[in-house]
Length: 231
Ligand code: DC
Image 1 (cartoon, rainbow, N blue to C red):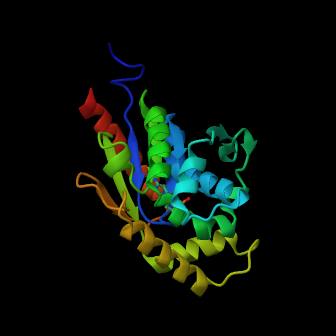
Image 2: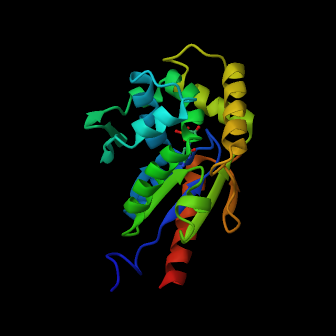
């Protein structure tokens, strides 16, 4: 039996390093196609926030793993983008704090955390019609996604974009941000479990000199071609 949506919807995986514009692009692509946007980084951030609140160090792998299996993480579309819930509490803003940002990489390197979240993510994509962004979506979570994009940009450009997003609310220099972004790349690329890699069948898009709308337009166009092919 065909699953709901099979044949007229595809899954789109958008992977890439921090600050490449994945979430903005993925949200806009989903809007244009009428698909569901899933920000998997937000799920790792929610686990990190919960671990901080429970005073569990990310390096304490066993406690972190046990803790992760007890959590209920929910995503709901909202007017300002996706809302993130931790055990029913709206934590959409809290998960963007610098404290969470600085601790999320070691949390995301925990095998059990990845298994728990990976299973949830596959469940979201079962009926097709999702645009999922992350680090290992095309390579690991949805290896059969019909369209895989690896979105990247130079470290300097990514730092500049993040700076423009957060400079008003948090005191940090552009140089500090560039160092932190490069460090996060290093941790995400270097970990043993599901590292940030470009899937063999992913299309690499360098957004350094592109606007968000140009990237979105290119991906929507590609998705229409893939959809026609999938029929
Ligand atoms: O995209 P982001 O900055 O919100 O992601 C937060 C962290 O989560 C980042 O350090 C990498 C990690 N992550 C991951 O390991 N796998 C994913 N699918 C998504 C994010």
